[in-house]
Length: 283
Ligand SMILES: C[S@@+](CC[C@H](N)C(=O)[O-])C[C@H]1O[C@@H](n2cnc3c(N)ncnc32)[C@H](O)[C@@H]1O
Figure 1 (tube, rainbow, N blue to C red):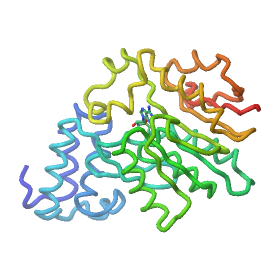
Figure 2 (cartoon, rainbow, N blue to C red):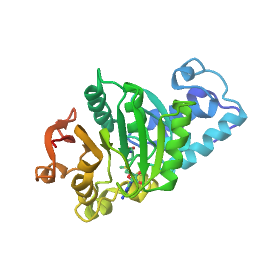
Figure 3 (spheres, rainbow, N blue to C red):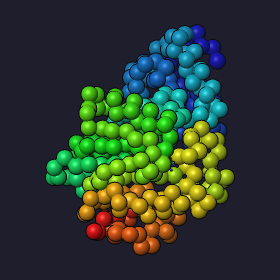
């Protein structure tokens, strides 16, 4: 690509063609990447359609495109992903937030409506997107935890960017509840839930860039969720709620009896798939 004299519109058209066999959204990807290279947003691009991108931006865009052609996700190239009401910093230390996880945030916010300041724990927090969004919606005190020290670092970056100076967000590196103390009104989780077979079949191309421990939930995919369900009651206040995202077969497992927990709701997504389960601590 001649990067020295390229207009914005043709740069997008050319990139779209190159990404056709790589991405399900080639034009969108091209627009986001060029907007990032130009230091603007997608709407800003439309006003520049007939303008020269400039040598520096065109070269940066070409390097972004190269990475995308090698299947790197757009969010890792731009280091940002929108989720709920905010834009989160992301890199390959954490899962890229998915829109379906917003169901957990909406449920938590609805349960916390009209309550005094509450205590929320987001385990398996990754970038912190779920917990920080619950804080955005409810003003809760928040604990973010993950087994990965790298993920906790990224969650800290997001907390500092989205809630500068906040003194009621804490961070714990913990294997599930291993080093967690205290009791919470709400615990949220989007645990890893892919099975051994899912890992082989689905974690290829783009998904291969994301951390393996963000996906692998044990042989059946339910091992980590099962462990959480076995002990979450010890960390909930009576009447508190645990909201967890479900894997493909998750709803086959959750009807078991778990100590001091009742299943109160299964949340379906817009395609009718069981997305999340809500449990209430009974005693
Ligand atoms: C599916 S990702 C979810 C990340 C984030 N909550 C989100 O929704 O984008 C799962 C996260 O669980 C973490 N994890 C995996 N095993 C864990 C364990 N035993 N204890 C705590 N966290 C764990 C991974 O490091 C990863 O960040």
